Image (cartoon, rainbow, N blue to C red):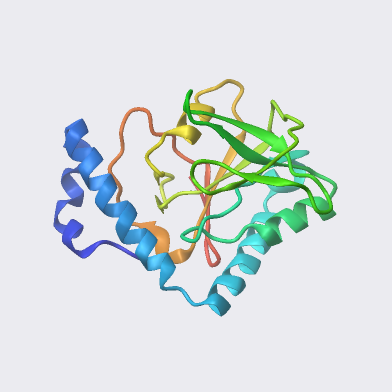
Length: 207
């Protein structure tokens, strides 16, 4: 389980951090955990993605969901292709995020079959060119730079997922990541939404 060395002695004081201090700590931790992930070998990444799909696929929340939101990963996030394949085999509607940077807003569009046309958003993430919107998800798999086993999440800093999860009704949430991205504690602010499940290649934790 990963923890930033220079951050270790300050974890007990995190709940008392001022907003500007929390922002600085989050920035440092994002870089730390992303660098850990970049050091993971390709064979280990592939095995981790398969193990993650098996664990998520075993959850009742996944089996019962008719529509599932799944992110398309960046280089410092766990691969979701096995999860997408599993969801499709089970006949679920798979939706991927589409960002609206001017509004700092997130929507989900159906992931097309076959060889769809893609565009890249401002963050370099693929999005479907044609959008068939899914306005209500049963389950959402959420990326993060790091998570704790109590459901706290360190996101990218743009707040897209936290704003999306502020909507009602909100989907059930699973934070998914490599084992290296599990932290003991993370700085948490009022707008940060806690995950209901944390799943890694070797752990399944209900919060």
